[in-house]
Length: 257
Image 1 (cartoon, rainbow, N blue to C red):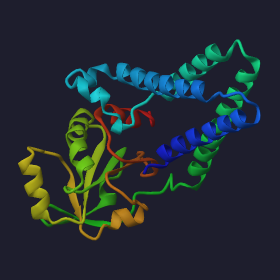
Image 2 (image 1 turned 120 degrees about the vertical axis):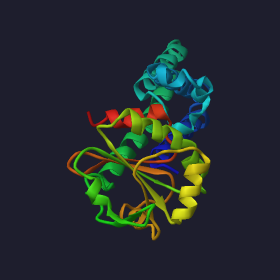
Image 3 (image 1 turned 45 degrees about the horizontal axis):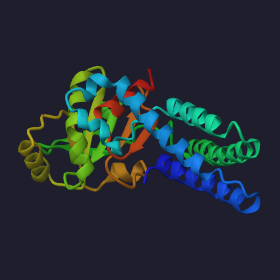
Image 4 (image 1 turned 180 degrees about the vertical axis):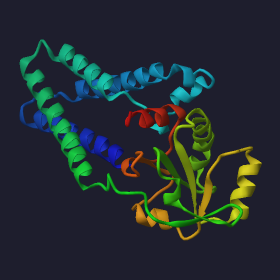
């Protein structure tokens, strides 16, 4: 499970635990308002994200309902939640105070955990010097693709989210010729990978093989798909574990611009 999702869930638990304490100790229950804030905030965060990328969702509107890509506008969601909470608690000072305490407890865990995660993460690590193979069997070093911003996708054909995101990856590769996309298959044979690409009509460039999963080991990757974003100097600036849609992929690419 991605660390960001773990922190979100943990923050919700802490906020509700704080609300439960106030319910038991002070006979005031901010829990119902807290849940309204959460649902309104997540809804607004998703809506704003989808509207910002309306051109990408236009061809597949139902994809806007697929939350697995993690596409949310955090600022819009946070502001919406605060407005809802302030409005629903404004007539009762004790309720407002307990609600604020619950929100602050959840935020403290989320932002503190995020800061700690960034401090302990392997960001700024260089592209690992790993020997890979092309589908024709010729050797190639992962570092040979460096020299400009690079997106490295670790995937396998048996992995359902890898399969779902591959068309979006291919479309983004075509839309951004200024970037280098490298699709590093983990642990499968050239025959298996070639058959999969042909069966699904994928003409993805820079598909390479990592039979021993060395890239996963060197980058401390524990699940697939994982996408690594490197800047032009070959330094890692972002990693994402889990499925990406075209819109969320574009968002992450823009972070370095």
